[in-house]
Length: 137
Image 1 (cartoon, one colour):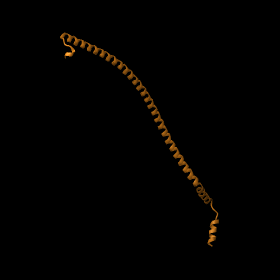
Image 2 (tube, one colour; image 1 turned 30 degrees about the vertical axis):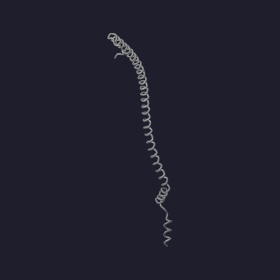
Image 3 (cartoon, one colour; image 1 turned 90 degrees about the vertical axis):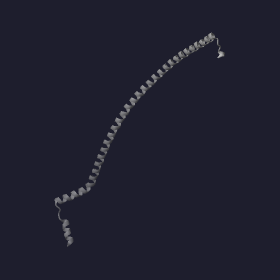
Image 4 (cartoon, one colour; image 1 turned 135 degrees about the horizontal axis):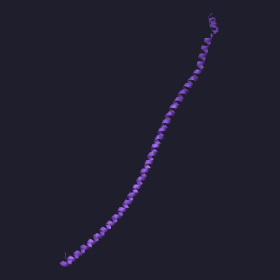
């Protein structure tokens, strides 16, 4: 008899609410993996958006750094050109100084030669006046 009671329960007509609940449960069971997949895709998309935002920020920073390096290189080029001009000017100044020194040394040597010659003449004249020859002292 127990089996008849169970059978009766199984055969009882289901109400619309019961059918709706059963269908909802079955639909939830079938749709849950899809919902989970969609949630996972949403998380992945959010992660990709965050990564893209980070990459955009990094690219902006790199762009700023490159612009700064470009400006620095331009300044270095200007400085190098200025140094080249200064070196050229210093070389010209050194050549001019060397020429002036050469001229001054020549004048000094001429002067010293003349003074030595005057001194020799004076010595010779003194020797002549005093009557001493070079061999005597």
